[in-house]
Amino acid sequence: MFDSDGTLIETMKIDEECFVRSFKDVFGFADIDTDWSHYSHTTDSGIFRDVFTSDETYIHLDECIRSLNEAWYVAQEVRRTAQKSAITAAAYRYALVAYARPYTNADGIHRNRKNRNAYKRKTPEGLATEEIALHNEILRLRNKILAHSDLTVKDAKLYVGPYGSKSKAVIGSNIQPSLPDVSAVISLIEHSLDVLYEERTQ
Image (cartoon, rainbow, N blue to C red; front, side):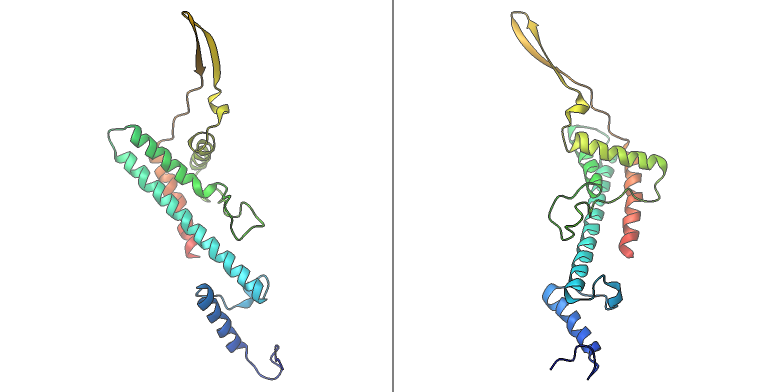
């Protein structure tokens, strides 16, 4: 005989404790929200799915913060380095790609399969107009030049012609656009981190 609705005996509190303890023991999830009205479906599987998705969302948020901190640290080192070189140029390009990481598609497998772009972050709120323009420029640089080779940006053309007694091939292309000012990028990263840290405390 089962008493699922409390007709014979009131076991809601015991049921709740067992359910929460099983989440912790089996899956390692602590601090489960026991206000069941917060869940989209109050079945075992519905609660399990919501907890799993919210846990993954928090992990992704933490990864975004880590990526922006990495970008900030590298950009600071580039700004501090008086003697610029190919190494500092490569490091700065890496910092720009690291900044863009939270704002680009995540093609890996994740639990929120219904939305492929579930973890692609929007432009941070509260940025000044010039910061939004810089944010968009960094994403454009990342997508067209830094992380990919988009030949439409270079507009490269092959020229073949005689040179002395032999034929020679020459490739002509546009000069790649200059990278943004490092101090402006550091300021943008700091403002973006402020938004993410605020989100993490909620």
